[in-house]
Image 1 (cartoon, rainbow, N blue to C red):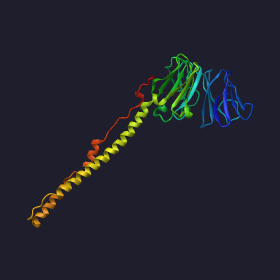
Image 2: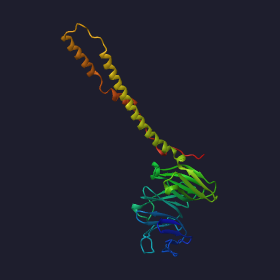
Image 3: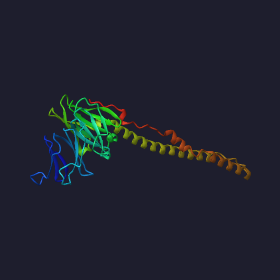
Image 4: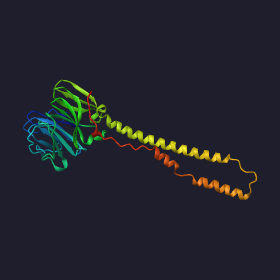
Length: 303
């Protein structure tokens, strides 16, 4: 079952039949029968008001829920594998599908739904559930979470392809469903498997390196500003101290007007000779250049 918008949701059964329902009426409002094997997952494309379905018959289809036709808008070619799960990435421009053989198939919406544009192998068993990261994480555009029948919840980077690590372990029991709280934008991910257990994992503990990078960048910026103000204050204090010291120096009693002028000129030359960029130099010596750490360089571990 998939909630689409107020007063509309959909269901898929083991015979491949898709139904649209309005909870205010006892009967379905639409029925689609173009699939011949069980419906495994749904993806709602809110920008187009379209429903993407995956099926064990090896195809995915796109349905316009506003239309009156009982045929899909588009349907993929036979992928010669059971399609079990689906998730959108990169602001919905790409769609990733998990299969029975442990392959991630990537579809590009701009190139149509006929066939996938890339295949990412690596999972030893079927990929039964997929989930995207909250958009607050820098790697959310290219990293997904996968639930497999081997009992592991993994973090997988797609561009470039890299297994980042294991997020949760259900033993030898397959994972059926994974979801992030607060409509996909929270900090907890729940995974449910055949062990009749719901595991809640804190994403901040798993992807803490990304948070550390953000905090370090912010701390570095604040620290740099504080150092700059401190250097500027020290420079001004030194200048005031020099002027006060000169003012306290004893003057000859028998100075003539001819002596006053050189004294004033000498004093002016001393001021003019003072390095006017001294404050900037001190600021430069106190600046910190920190190279940002990238999420792909870290390995994830489960305690």
